[in-house]
Image (cartoon, rainbow, N blue to C red):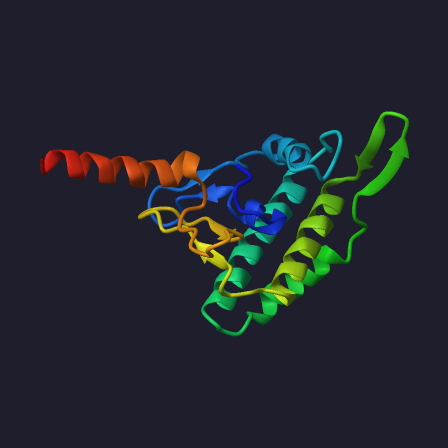
Length: 176
């Protein structure tokens, strides 16, 4: 789930296979609360109501559209910029150091603020040669290529990379 190399891109990637058979990893408010912990934004799941959930899903789509626009060297839609900046203006998660370690607390708006800020940071410094869309036929995940050679093609080996390599292997074996 966290294969993009960037928090904002991992968030955008919670809707997989967008063009063919969408798989939403954030299908419910509880999923969004759980993801907030899995992503490291919060220590405990926040309460997320339907309105907050709808805002988070809307933010996810804004992030996706803004990154795609950047990759296409197209202007950012004004409405998307406004939504991103509005989300970023909320209070981010609060970090408190305890004897057990850092405790990250906040509500759904704080999660949105952290994600919008991460997206703004990414977009402000976007290196178009490093951010890519997965080369898998159906995959629509975006990722940062931090490989030494700069030639990473897949969002991750566990899912897309293995599929492509296995299909290539089967095709080579069939021609023998």
